[in-house]
Image 1: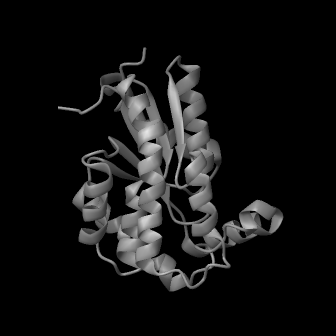
Image 2: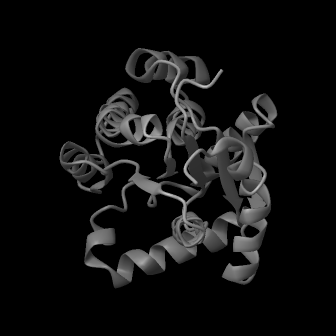
Image 3: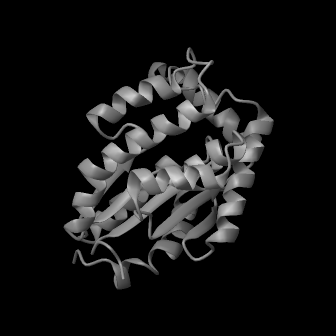
Length: 222
């Protein structure tokens, strides 16, 4: 039995995968169909989360320990859960989140080497059983995605100040990708890979193919 009447969808992917664009397109589509949607961004959706995001993603903090990184992620996530996600799900809305704990499993658990069990223990402590009903993970060539992220960072002053993760080695990002593959093996029904290559509208249709299976049966917002 679901803990909340709403539907919780998250977007995942390696850097430059286009997940934020596809999330925005999905949110617009759901709202155009008369559904009530609440958005969340990880980290940084709340006032406290924005402060944590600045610390987490600023390249100046190159000395940050992996466990510090993990705990800051969960500090921001717990605040968002209490302020945004749980209230919206309780109201029966659809919550669409740009990243959630799967990111921490892939980035800190796999790529940083902390392990899935450490991340899941932190999740249970901070969030209990709260988890997405569906996760869309966009796949794209790693080097192409990193080049896209680098270009974005150069054009935007704000993004340039949030490039600490983007600037990690290619091997680091390969381990992130491997982390996502491990999650998909563990939870194939919830965690769905979607091809992120090609025209954005074509990708959006691929996303909708996955999401539409959940919306009619699971959403109570109509």
